[in-house]
Image 1: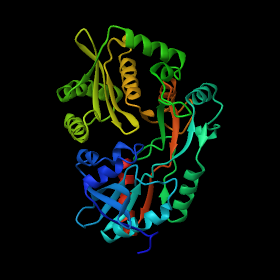
Image 2: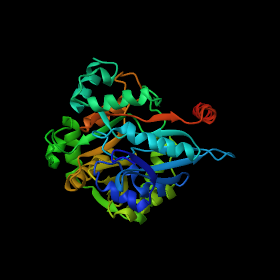
Image 3: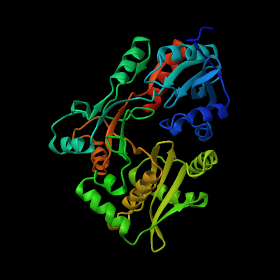
Image 4: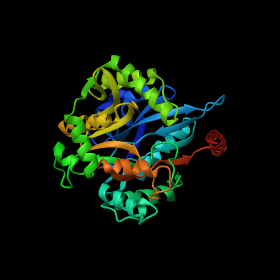
Length: 380
């Protein structure tokens, strides 16, 4: 093997975890603990080696097809290596060969690169004025030529990506809302600096909630039941199918077994009545507001914003670069049913970040066609 050749072979969860420590920007979706949460998938850990040095790693989640022993291989926010500098095609080829040999019919990969960023204030203004139909039509605050090059190269090598539409696609959203916790030069903002990115009303309400009569606490495992009570109420009110309490108990246990404080439950209450609750994940330089819930009573106390203030304060204290608020639509049409979500998140100071998105590579056409037919029928 030449000095420039990269090989791929299975590694242990511990080896993968140790490699992730070199990449504080990596998503929590690559943690071995996340595989413990996704129990319906089977985990595999792959390592990229140059000679004997581990230079890349990935958590690969496998979902089997019925009867026959083929799997869909999903790599959430990975693989983890230096996408900015290495020959990523050199890294992907041995991975593809390994997975194909092990009866994978399709690879789904969320390459961890940022393509473009739009500032919260610019998106808010465009939504209010109706000056653009899509976020991509706005002048961006930053853009990555490297990410565009990677996207073009993946497409040229047979990878496919479902283009982001007005509604959310299956998987991780391509457009994400993130509150910056550092300035453009990389210096950590204080809480007031973060709040300054909000619009005037959101900033006023957040400060009022934080200084008001609410009791905001960091919960323990036993408080997941309190969160889930509000979560069920929110699901019924907003007409979505919620997850069972056991899912959040597993998440809390697995992530905090990895490192205490990785998963946090927050509860805001008033005179003994729970009004809002949230689940936040912290890993490396990132923080993610992954689930939220609220009561329909005492709205004027702004309990969700009190939780937001506490999450921002904790994330700043931990040195995080951003607090992720989840996905948004790529549309700026006022009539679209997701426009209100984008407006709400940008009033909280969220920039809109376009990721590289999730890419698929077919290794077995027959099973891929059958899988895609099943997914289309399930989505109807």
